[in-house]
Each structure stands twice: as C-alpha cells, then as structure tokens.
Amino acid sequence: MNIVTQTATWLSDPIHWSGPNGIPVRLFEHVIISGVSLVIALVIALPIGLYIGHTGRHTNFAVNSANLWRALPSLAVIAIVLPLTTALDPQLGFKVYPTVLAMVVLAVPPILVNAYAGLAGVDRDILEAARGQGMSAPQILGRVELPLAVPVIATGIRSATIQVVATATLGAVFGFGGLGRYLVDGISQNDTGQIMGGVVLVAVLVVIAELLIALIQRALTPRGLLLATTTSAAQSSI
Amino acid sequence: MRLPRMLALGAVGLVLLSACSLGGGSKPTIKIGSVSFYEAKIMAEIYAQDLEANGYTVDRTGIGLGDRSVVAPAIESGQIDLQPEYIGSRISYYKGTPTGDAAANLTALQGLVSAKGLTVLNYTPAVDTNAFVVRPDTATQYHLTNLSDTTAVQSQLKWGLATDCATNPLCGAPGGALQAQYGLTAQTIAGATLLSACDTPMADALKAGTIDVGELCSTQPDIAVNGWDVLNDDKHSQPADNISPIVRNDYLAKVDQASFEKLLNDVSAKMDTATLTSLNKQVAVDHADVAVVAKAWLQANGFLPKSS
Image 1 (tube, helix red, strand yellow):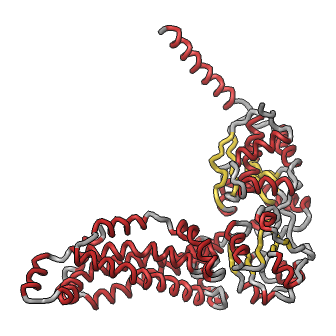
Image 2: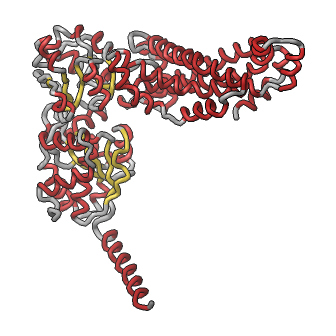
Image 3: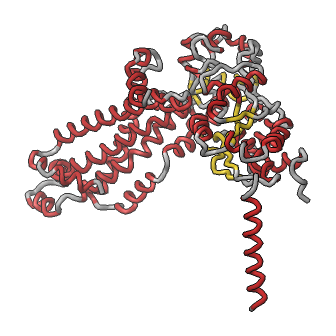
C-alpha cells in the first residue's frame, strides 16, 4: 500500500469519524483552540500595532520586541509555562493553557508588525489632505488610515492564522486533543495513514481559514483599493 | 629550527600510523544508534565504550536518533549497525504479540528480524516494563495495590495512557491487556489523557494531579524520587521488555563474530533492573553526563580499567 491509498483508507474509514477520538471532535477542538488563541492575539496585537502605526511612537521598541518573540520556539514556550499553569489548574493548566499561550506568542508578532506597517504605509499626502478637510484624529484613523491599511493588516492576520492552525498540533504532545492527536499518536503507532490523514486535515483547515479571512478582507477593503490589493499584499510579505 | 620540524613530521607520521591500525583489519567502524529515551542512550553508550576499550572505532551519530519508528528503519537500511532494543516492544512494533517470558520473546524477535538481516544478542536481566503508577494519596483513598483494584473505581480516576494505547494490545486496544484482563471500559480508555509513556510530561502530569494513574516505565527514576506506588500487574499482562543489542549481519560478517558477541553479552549479563534504575536516576534526576555514567559503571564492573 502506498502512502496515498493508506491516507485515503484512513480518512474514509467510518470508525475515524465518530467517538471521542473521531475527526469531528478533534476538528472542533482544533478550531476552538486556534480561534481562542487568535482572538487573544488580536486583542493584544491590533491595538498596539495600530497605536504605534498611527502615532509613530515607540515604533522601534514595539516592532523589535514583537520580532524577538518570533525567535521563541512554540515547544519551548509550552515547556516553560507548563509548571506555572499546572500550579494554577492541574487540568486545563496542563492540557490547554500552555498551548494557548504558545499560540498567542506565535500569533502576536505578525499581527502587530503588519498593523503597524499597514498604517505607516499610508501615503502622508492623503493624511494631510484629510486633515486639511477638517477631519479629527479619530476620523482620520477610522475613515482614512484603517480602510487603506486593511490589505496589509489582513495579511498579518492570515499568516498568523496559518501558523497557529498548523502549530496547534503541538498541544497533542501535552495531552490536548485537536488534530495533532493524529500526528502524535500516528507516529507512536507507526501508522502512516493516520499521520498523513492528520496532515491532510490540518492543511484543509488552513485553506478554509485562509479563504474565510480573504473573504472578510475583501468585504472590508474599499472598492478603490481592490484593484491594487495584489500589489500591496506582495509588499507586506517583507 | 631543524629539530622541531623533524619532531613535528614524526608526530604526524605517528598519528597516521595509529589511525591506520585502528581503521583497518577486522574491527571496522561500528555505527551505534538508539532511540532518544535516556535509558536507551545509556545502554548504547555502555556498549560503545566497551567496544572502544576493545579496539573498535565507534560512530555515535545515531545515538538518540528518534522514536522506534525512526531507529528501526535506520538499522534495517544500514544507516546504523547496532542498537540497544527493548525486545518486547520491538515485537509489538512488528505487529507481533510479546509475552512475559523473556527467552520466548528473544526467539520470537529473532524470527521476525532474521529476514531483515539482523541478529538479536543476549538480553539484560534488567527489565523495563510498563508500570501503572499512582500517588500514595490516590492509593490510600481508593485502596489500590494491584492494577485489578482499579477496575471498580476506574471512572473516578483520571488516567494517563501512552499515545499508542488505543492500538497497542498491551494497553487499551480492544481485547488487549487493559480491556480484556483488567476490565477497563472503552470509555475509560477514550477519556484518558494521552502522553508519551515513560517520559517527563507523563511524570509531570501525575505530579500535578492532571492524572491519577500514569503509565510509566518500571526503571523510571521519577517513581522513587516522588515516592509513588507502582500498581502490581497481578494479571501478568505486561511483557518482559529486557534489553538486547540488535546488530546487522553484514557487520557481524566483517568481524570476529564470536568475540564480538561475547563482548556485548558479558556486558548485558551484568545489567539488572536495580542497576539500570540507578543509572537512569543519575542521568535524568542528577543530570550527570551519559558518557560519564556509562564509564563509571563499566569501570565498577571490570570492563574498563579503573582511572587513577
């Protein structure tokens, strides 16, 4: 049996689609832990990114310290916080909190840096024109800067989402469920179909999440900018 | 100027000469590998130093290579020549069923690996088997001594089982040891926290109270260090996981096989469970270097000359 048929056999076996270790349950767990982590990361990173992008203050400090976080391997974050969180709560503190924290650490930098870059990249002449028309600072942020920065900000959220959905599989090493269960258990059970089945499910989830964010991004982007979306997305990948 | 230059030349010549005498002849470099578990690394290092003391050159690149699913293909394909292995678990890896009889396991494993060009040498008296471990407070609260005592209270306990438990006949597979012999329900097994057995997260989880029963290894130092109770495997469900070196036949063909095998068999014969547990403690708890621990043990047992 080659790897493709093994994967297909595993994925199409109805046993793997029911029960507490079934794909629906694991998929749900994975979506929840990724979603919660991303929401927390957004709440932390977006305001900071927008603030430094809008004001131009503390830029170096914020961007550099955010990038420093990127150097932390998620596995190390989990291992470091595990003793602290288990002391707080032996159940969730062991199985859930460390992974969520590691995912937040992973997601904050791209969101923060892109939010800053999006605002900082808005043409100064446009801001001058807005100010000249008598718009207040909040009006400029809400009606000029933010809409123009949407493509870049959304790109940051997209790359954070991809990383979180793919890396949340690590939680399985520390007793959490999610799709990582199939990777970790598949490796120890020497079951290629299960490993590759898990990989396919993670990949599909990543693509779906990507498409969803792309749709939201499209809805939020001003019509005039849509034409230029491709070029700004390319710029933001720096 | 002339004299030092002559000396330097002479030194280079000596180095070359000694390198030749080590590399050639009937003692070719042996590539030793192991799984990343520290106990396996200790055994690999002990075999390595013993071989070195007897004139073999050892390539240690493969020690701590990864899981069994990485190391087994590595020795089958010749990326390594020798590995210490848990004979019962290796039988399970090949989808066989190990028993509690070590000699029978050795015969069974040899039968499985002969076609792959491998030879299994003698096993250690030391047994590292799956141990189901509880904290003393749990043992007192639920009156647990034997593993069968958990059957009645299984739903009140939080179980920590190995990541391969669901399909492992020695663990939670349908009709396997825990279900058939100890009467654990499929529901109990499905609700367990799955962690790598014999590893630190499992011990951490037991210590923190995330789980009440943890699947550890009988030689794992965490058990003694934390004063935990090992539940007695009263239905004799767990196999004899003694440790044997597995060697590639094409390597054995290049050396004096009888003396090579005797070297390793003599070492294995001296390794019992208590000794292995204490070596594990030195490495995993006291953070001693594996090579230092291996050397001290070999010296204490007369395989290496005592250092002055």
